[in-house]
Image (cartoon, rainbow, N blue to C red; front, side, top):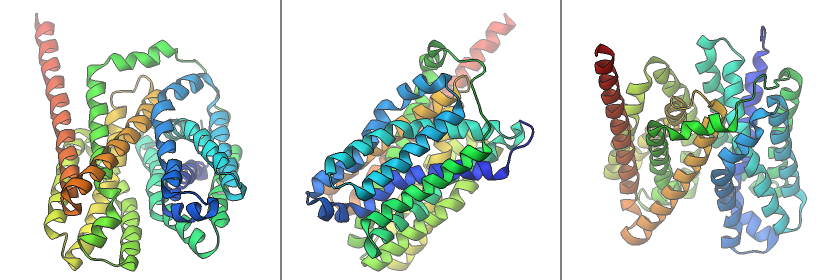
Length: 394
């Protein structure tokens, strides 16, 4: 492609923003949904858990099926379904209908995400591909920083319908932008299912998958209970917790570009350092958890490091999936959602049995496991290189 409208990368990022807002924004409005449909909090929680479960279960398989299709058509179909789903959320009077339209967009979530990243990298010269991917990835952090809080604000101050219409409008803008500026991208040479699946035979890939699963478990075993920790341990009131959530999301944007730059300089050093940074920040949060002002500072540093988990994990996994990048990205989406599920469940268990202050240890434990898998992977590569070198000499 000779010339690409720079707004196209922004539209791909906006599509990711809209998808994250649709997926995670519902967390902040579950009380309104409970009242609106006259259901229990447990039933309302299905809207969160079923989305993550479907993403984790279907991601790689659906991406395989779509691998031979025109990328523009897939991106437009996915984002259009998110527009329709948000409109259904806004106007349906049937909870069962809302659940159904949580399942359908969840199926297309990993397809859009996987193809958007690959497309962004291919739209620019090779030396700029990393920055293009970082910009699209920023849609995730901006979604957490602004999409989720704004959804909650609209539901609280205007109406539940307004919150969902916001999601519909965002996805609609992304749809129009992609429709206008993205040229048709048919697959010139379809990669066979067998060739894509063949990457699963790589032992090192499974170590990378174990790493990203542990990284996301480390992130969300604590972050999922962020408000409870600040409320019970730091004794912050609701206003301060809301402010800290906003600050946390905003500094994630900074962290996304900071870690993107570090990865550009050295993938291996950044990947090794990341879980150690997480262990360090969690240790300090544990020690200073009951001190108000220090925790305000720590939330800022925590948010910066937390954001690195997204882009560091994606870069680490795709280093082993270059032969099938879209399938590799779908594995990223599936196993990070698995990590979220495992981490959140473990964090809940720790709170129930050991207390909220001990929650931090679950994050430290998963971060340490991630570090171990990285070391095992790198040592395995080193041994393989030595063996290959000896065979070459012989």
